[in-house]
Length: 239
Image (tube, rainbow, N blue to C red; front, side):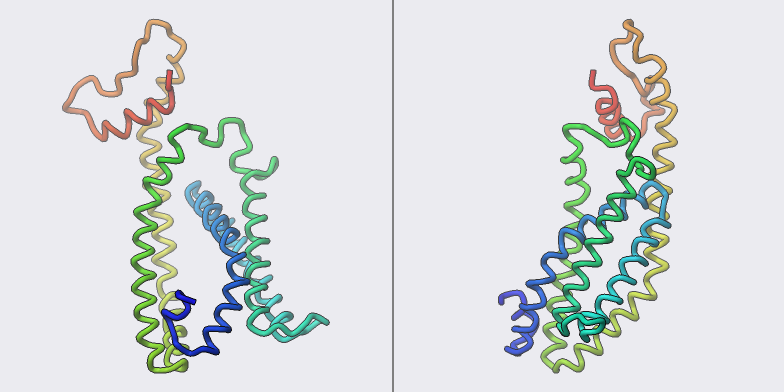
């Protein structure tokens, strides 16, 4: 009630929204896994697979919406509840496809031994990167709630027009999102290439008993990004 009432005071609209959200909440874990799997593919330089999964998910969603909202093909007419159920089912299917494409024996990215990072502090590292981004999105959502509340004070028709405008604006931002993914991948690839020679040396010399520690920089003038590289070496060879 609290969150829905932040948008509107229309009692009928609040009841519909609550019933819709009760079904939609089951979609959240599937949606979260889909976002993660898409990021994994994109981080690996594979932007085609997430697009294919998204196309499949949207086709399934449209088909289910057509059948469940209006009650076609012998299915019950569920109205807006059908839209929520269609979203849950299509996202669940997308989640299964994404996980299969990552972990399957034939197609998986991480099937080879050692492909997944298994370090004690890996979870903390993920959180340290994810939490600031989470905070940014929270701030955007708070602003969206306030703006939606203001527009809804003028009625449902202006709010519907606003939502259409937002979707149209989103279409114009899609190229920028694509370039953002490309930039993230290329930067991470450049950093990996820069460190590649160092880890090749470690792989070649790791079993020499005369080596007591790894020294990535022998002089201060050539030192760069020392903290990150030092932590990376400790994770790579904790011995």
